[in-house]
Length: 196
Image 1 (cartoon, rainbow, N blue to C red):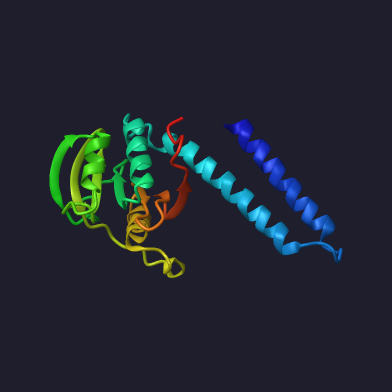
Image 2 (cartoon, rainbow, N blue to C red):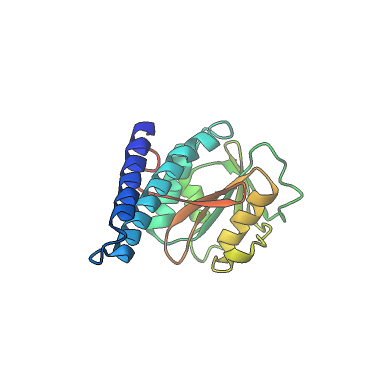
């Protein structure tokens, strides 16, 4: 992955260098060049975030494959999801408890919880180690001013990650896109091949 990241960053650097070199010419399509650089940068960011997600979770759950499979299926079906994975910090003071589950973490159970129409699907699932602790939890919302365009799930993912070291996975119901929040940052991830 590191070699691929270096190659992508080198390509990105080359594109930026080309843009700088051609900036003064009348034939230069600066907006097109910016668009190309923007897309390339997004691809690099998504690939890198997807790769590092596994390492961020490795010490806290050995069920990364289960989480990946569930996120991929939820994303494909545009089923919104919000999954908080407890790491070192206690989350008790920041989560309004939902419905206790206390079950082994499995992809089918996660998918069933977030199935549209299920009474638990609107809240967050809390995972600690390899167990689903509870569902339909309410998380604190981020108060970041520039996040107004984000939906409630994304604001909740950011909100918990701003107050704790939890890693929060989120799938958009509108677009099916997946991301994770960590340390007050929201990072998009790819869903196909996430576990590879």
